[in-house]
Amino acid sequence: MLAGTLTTDKKTLSWVLYDWGNSAYATTVMAGFFPVFFKEYWSVGATAAQSTFYLGVANSLASLLIVLLAPLLGAIADQCAARKRFLLFFAFLGIGMSALLPLVAQGQWPWAVLLYVMATIGFSGSITFYDSLIVFVTTPARLDQLSALGYAMGYLGGGLLFALNVWMTLQPAFFGLADAAEAVRLSFYSVALWWLLFTLPLALWVSEPDRRTDGGALRAVRGGLRQLRDTLRHIRQLRTVYLFLLAYWCYIDGVDTIVRMAVDYGMSLGFNSNSLIVALLLTQFVGFPAAIAFGYLGKRIGAKRGIYLAIAAYVVIVVSASRMESEQAFYALAIAIGLVQGGIQSLSRSFYARLIPHDKSAEFFGFYNMLGKFAAVLGPLMVGWVGVVSGDPRLGILSLLLLFFVGALLLSRVADEGGGVRDGVDTREG
Image (tube, rainbow, N blue to C red; front, side, top):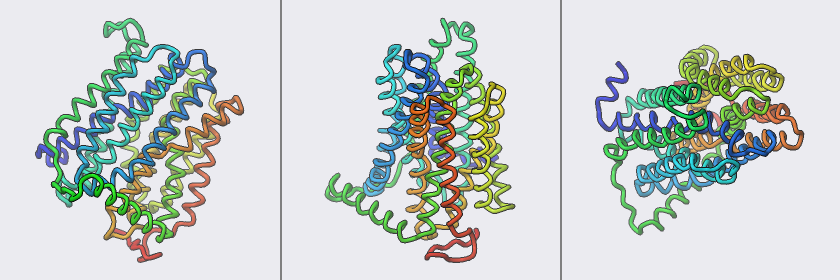
């Protein structure tokens, strides 16, 4: 009923379909097949610790570049109504680089890293401007519903293509393919095609109000810099918001690192890559309903306590991961991650909404979304570096505990939600 109500409008449906399309990159490439192919094919001859380090550097570099670029580009896009143009630029960058991945020869890990970094920048950059277009495709009363529908379609679209790709790698002969390696290459092509196909409706039918800036590009850049400076100044002046964003940056970095490095870590322990991919697929389908359930839990015990509960679960997950000896244990951890991954993200968003000034919610949520979507800078680098120095991938994964502990410590210094105004910020329940 909800989907039917919201998607009768061509613009709304086109916007939703982009999430359906681009999520294939997050599942099939970023979390699934790239780590496997990188370790077994492109990094042939390197030790497990070395290939993990290379992958960690690639993820960190992509995230860092987006962290540096996104706030300024977002502010410039606000100034000259270029959200859709920026989205399409980054989307086509990601699509093009994904389509080039199958052409990288065995052992050529530097080329694989370069294409992966560029594709991830395209994927992450496009999401920034995708989010900002939501206000132009629906009414204020339906923003929450449409946002939820977009997430749901992303889980479903990315999960369905990933399931097909996993089937191709497990039974390549059924699809007329020579082996699993050929199936993986074809999967990269399928992601590019899927992403492109479901970008076209947005390109054709989603628009934003024209806001031409006198003085051209230079004036837009100056306006963007001014807007970015003002946002940063406001955040620094509000201690509660500032502390929460620091806490969020730490613990969500740990969460995103686990997503990106889990398959690589399992392979470093000698687990079968097919089993790891199936476990990742399981996480994808557990995550969405679990996030909804976690939302109800947050209403009963409070968002902040819910976040603490999720952080505690991740501490147990990390410690258990450092000690696991079997693929069955990896499956159990995949389910555990699915149970809390969406929950910690949704409760963080609702808690933050109670801390920020209501009259500046768009400005403050823009910065929050940038941090959330472009985390995983420190974590992958820590996992890779500690693994190389110690020669033990188990110690590398344990290093993530630092991010969760620091995040929890900073969160403890954030004023509880509700209770009126603190530090000049409206934190009333609602």
